[in-house]
Image (cartoon, rainbow, N blue to C red; front, side, top):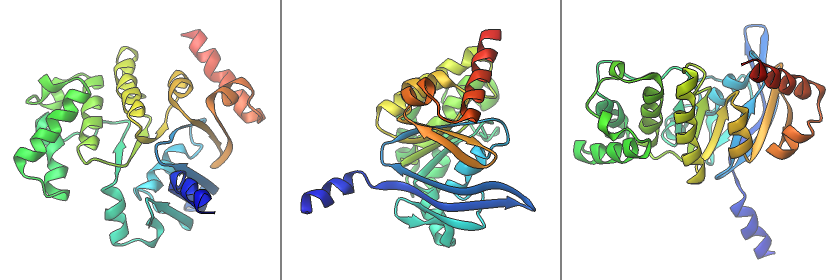
Length: 259
């Protein structure tokens, strides 16, 4: 019995969504979402535009609130509100489509701001951590420049480094490459692959199916605010079960061939 309990603890969910529903006015954007994510699991969420993917991950750090259902992150119930929200946000890093860097601060200052405010680090401590992660995303030499002096791909790597400076347990990526020129996509995906190899718990909304194939433990397909299908990559791409999934993969494939 004790062995079984111990094994179970190793596979406990760090994120749990139970019967989550969300509306914008009368429009239901999420319908009965059940999702459980294990520590260290890497999940790619894909689906057509307007399927609720971004809304789903924005609910995990309460950038969006839900009207019904339960969200538990790292043992803290988010849907209970109040102080819980701050506690969860301290553990969850988020990287957006737009880089959301402060234009008037240097790259280093962008990275040290949150650790000094939320983690009570000294300036020296925060700068040491920031340089560690700027090195990790391969742009330490850009530390004293401003965001406008960097390419889009570099700015997105700064955004990733900035999130890592808070030592999050979970990283959320919301279409991190969709605002980038094609030649910059690879440098950001390479950075994310490195994180995945380090065992970071990751949820990534993306259309980059090559990334999903090589990195994801599980691919989730959403349509019309529902999780339609989820499976390991080889199964998801090799033998999708749902007609909507097959259509989506067919469209992605033909658009890549067109390019």
